[in-house]
Length: 323
Image (cartoon, rainbow, N blue to C red):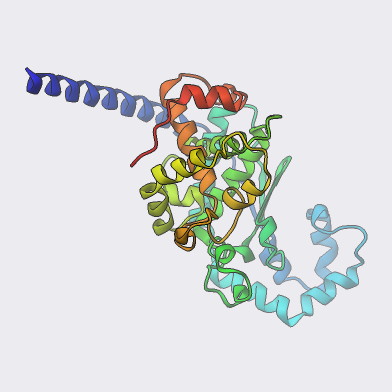
């Protein structure tokens, strides 16, 4: 009898998974039909190949990239600066073309348009920003600015004075994920609740949305982790959660917890010997798992998810950390 029950249970689960996969396939088929007019301009190349006489034309095409307070002499000096020239050359070597990124951007915009029909596909402009890694991607109104010099790879000599945990994110493979995240920050509101739990779930919603917008991307890419870091987080999910509970972090409003577990850092700070082994931002990872658990138990839209208070979401998530 027990064996028969297990057989029926296993068959039932298999049917549920099959139905879920079929539904996902139908959604992806619909998304693939969405027409996207993708326009990518290589300003980085146009400027690198320009002469002083080309500046008026460039300023007319890209007025937003030439602040009025800067005279033409500034741009002329930049065209001759040896460091800038090397920067342009290195970007040109790494990004000889953007065919893969164009394909992935199109897929991302199709997914955004499916879930957010009012979304306007932006004009994409690639540029250099003197390695301003705090502004790798800027999505504003009808423009998407991508600083290619912040995606040359973690081992690049331009990044030798940058801390490893930051340099590791300066990789081409994270570009589309950064665009998706930039969009997510614009549509997921921060609620008034300032508890650690609420902050965790805010990032959890961001990551869950990236899941929907980038269904074929590796989870490590979405977290901006290495594969080893993701596997560490997965393997230690239960003790991480237990630590948060035992230390009574969930309903604390101590901002230090954000620094320890949510904001970029070389590792998460539990105050234990294993800290140096851990990746940073583990609170974001846990928030993601809670939101994912909630969405598997509740049929609501993304827009409804974004506005659910942390306490309600947590209680209805039935979250049980993996061991």
